[in-house]
Length: 408
Image (cartoon, rainbow, N blue to C red; front, side):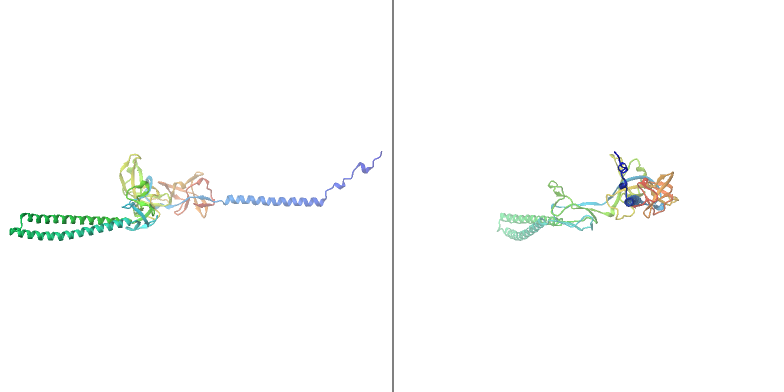
């Protein structure tokens, strides 16, 4: 059997790839790869930009001139701002609140009306007292008329007795009538005095329905509402208020601190004090010791010290936390070469050098500094920081030169 050449070797020419189709497929693949590369580059660029432009929030303090305070801190303590004059205004009678004329934060003057109480009963008692006084006065007039008549009768009886017309019994009876009316007249005068006293009390009760401020100050709390019962004593199972409002004399603010009795010898009246409020850590307030309370707390082993502000400021309010540094006596010969004073927490050691981080135009600038003596919680900077510079005081370990930051 014979086989032809064509059957022995099949024709495979029909299986060839069209060169035009292969070129189009390569072109599409290259386009896809190009676009994927572009997208990847954009994503990477966005991520890098997000990380590099992220701002870190920092807390800063303002560098102060070194000459602002002389002397060094010999003792540190903490306490609170307290007023010497603080009063919770209470009603002098038990009544219901009809109107409140005070709100928290309101400035009040001495004698200003804070609240009005229900005065219906007080007015009724006043009217009754006035009526009692009128009755007492009327009874006096009647007794005076009767006494005058009895005295005339007595004189006639005495004349008749001298003429031996009237008996001794008639004369005694006339004397007794006069004495009785005189006694009743004295009693009537006492009743008038009592009625006048009741009238004064009723008028005072009516006046007490108006509650006024005993001194000028700021209302720091409103302790009663319209419709509530108020009383000078606690009653009613807790449903009766004993206060209307609390007034603070803002001109009497001072600092109260507890000093350990082991260090009280370092404190003296008139001693200079540097105070820093917790709410304003960069604000140093000049003060001086006003008095040292001459008794110790045996439970805490402390002595209470009161410190007066050199000048008051509206930012200072009662019950603020404050840290104080008792300074050594001022010395006119004291001199310093320091440029500025900053908190100790703003200084960090890096690569063997003392550095600080300044905030300039929203970016961190690392500056090497030369340190001076320590002043309590602060430190003198001889070189590297000028007064008015903003220095970072927290989280220094995460900062780097040129980093973008946001001031807290």
